[in-house]
Length: 246
Length: 319
Ligand SMILES: Nc1ncnc2c1ncn2[C@@H]1O[C@H](COP(=O)(O)OP(=O)(O)OP(=O)(O)O)[C@@H](O)[C@H]1O
Ligand SMILES: [Mg+2]
Image 1 (cartoon, rainbow over the protein chains, first blue to last red):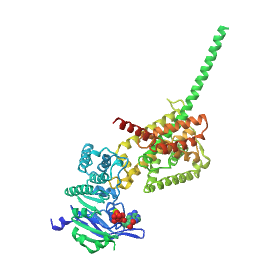
Image 2 (image 1 turned 90 degrees about the vertical axis):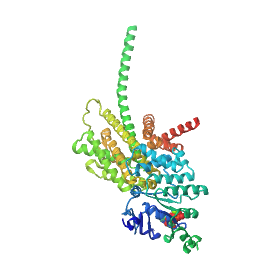
Image 3 (image 1 turned 120 degrees about the vertical axis):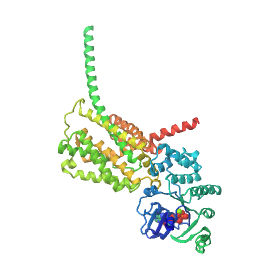
Image 4 (image 1 turned 45 degrees about the vertical axis):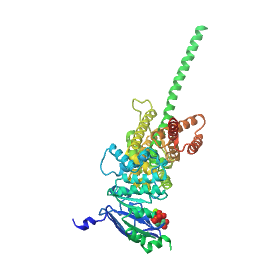
């Protein structure tokens, strides 16, 4: 095995552009994410972070640009196929299945995205262990509509985890949470990362980004303006300008 | 006089008994006629709910599927004198194809756009049939019933039985779907289509499956109606009433459980049959409207939802 085999990226985004009518939300974005990496994605409001996630998960079709995942071209695949291949995401505004309990929300993922043919009891066990791990064990039979904000965020992550992902994308899972809740969610993400899951974390809370990320990328108006270690990116002149809005 | 009196009263009693027996026979025909209609709507409502309830894609094209079922039979009978079972089977096959085509063309649309597309479909098909002379065109066509076979005394009795079979079939399929992975996937996409996709649910495929099955059943239910009415014309076969009534029955019963549409169809169907006899068939539309409004306002989840809520409240009260 050569060094380049080991370094082969999990996700490779090449020259990706996304337009909404005449408005270009992403300009020629190219980036590689390494297997096992903890990757922070930052940028001011409307800079295109969620749009990039939507392109990776397949919610949006990209016009020019290709996306490789595990060395395979997934640019034209439907979202559910990408999920089965190992790309999971949470939503910035939680999107639970409202007519279901927390347990049932996770069972959808286990029924449809589970990789092996496993028995119902095994799936139930997996479901409970994910819920316990996320601190939602006591909420298994509660309706998704009755969860608090932080519980909803956790359920989004738990449901994504139930698809058994290689890559987990968390879109502002901490927005609107108290500082102790932020730490709780951050610890969850760190513990997932320690289990060989590659994570892209979108976040506005800078302490969380600094603590979590091995590498950070900053978008501004759909362009990458900085990429590197957290401290490098924070020190970058253009990043500071983008955030101060000059 | 006493003996004569006994004979008289005996004769009168026999006469009354004979009249009673006659009314029993005539009365037995009516329940078959009326019962057939109720069974037909139970089957339609159950079939409709597979797409309209489980998937939440409100189909206003029930009458299109029903009418195509009717005209499949009309064509088969005029061309080949096909027997009833073949009419129903062919109806189901045509309905499945139609559901597949409709699904491919429209299921990428969401919500109201899908519903509008199904109305357009109804109009297109009705117009086509109206201009097809072979099956009678706008004027309609008379259909001859073949002789009834044992063990049935009348053709309507047999149709009543056949429709009951279709109800059982529709309910069995609907119940199966609800409890299978298809049902769980449909429930997820009904709640949130993008979240379902991103959780691994093949939404388009599941919607297509639901559309095909629902369409096949609705057409199959329409197929025996040609023989029931012994007549078919586009205006009645594609009557919007089928769409509206079916939808109302499903919503009144509730679509969260397979039994909802059955309950709704029985409640609304019997009420309508009763009013048709006691007052007139025109009141039906009014009653349908009033019941729909009452339920949309008071019990948006239908009777099923109402029952569940009451049970839930009781449980909370006990705890
Ligand atoms: N479906 C859409 N149609 C049209 N424009 C869109 C759509 N989605 C996003 N946009 C536009 O694209 C730009 C980038 O939006 P995006 O949601 O990706 O920003 P973001 O970086 O996630 O911002 P935030 O931090 O507020 O979540 C915005 O100007 C937004 O208005
Ligand atoms: Mg965003």
